[in-house]
Image (tube, rainbow, N blue to C red):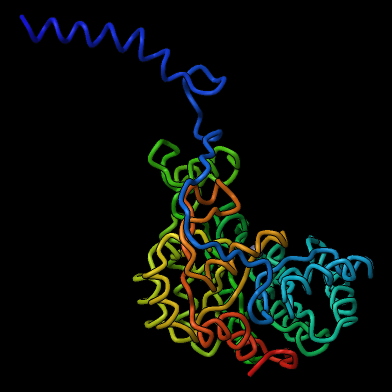
Length: 380
Ligand SMILES: [Zn+2]
């Protein structure tokens, strides 16, 4: 009897008094996940970084229209100088052109304008997969790569994620990344001594059900096109990653830089085992700093062990966002905000890399792997 009485009082309280007391803001007692933006009350030392400690090379940048006007190049320099970004690697040498002649012209123009500032830019070329089903494609693609490097001045090759996501065979099926027709291209890159920066796949969460357990729920909600679905014909995450590893282990004479840490920034033990198994594999940290900033101890150990294999990259050119990268890599700051909620609803912690490791990640590894970069302007 007593228990039942208490219970009914409890119900009465929760439905009347409590519900009024917990009304928050102007949203009738609830705050949506998108709105929730708590201001931290934690008081700890703050060492924000708007400028890198050392000059650095950003190996993952996209400038599609450098060749269109001198102004498109000039306007990059003030931001680059402020960040201490000494050399920007433009991975989009051939811009976005379905027409091969147009994309070759774009590459020539992009490199011509980049050369207005010696030492400040390097340009990678791209492969034309639109014509992959035509006879003789392999030879043509390999020859084009050779000409891009030897005649036009490209310093590397960038492969976009459309290989694995949307490049198709004549029968409509997807061309796998390890399709044998592309072998000639990977081999040619090795022969030319240029690296292949390859972006394959997306975060594994994009293949997971879009529900309350998905860590990238907000990103998928705001960017529905990023959702992957094996039932709709996509390769699985595992298939894409395996195809990428297949070409890396098959072409040992070619250096591959797996973009976005090969989509294992959230499993550094796994990534460590991959780097151990594939000595010609390198990684860059574009768009995955939020993963590193939530595991400072593990990340510091990983970077220290694999210090010769990691390069600095950012991907999207938003100068103000670089400060998160500098702060995570350079400081031991605690619990500071990341710049994009749909990547990370969690705060960052600094990894606090040593100067020796930092120099390798910022520029020494890139100078070693990318041929013909200007090493003046970088400290010993
Ligand atoms: Zn990119």
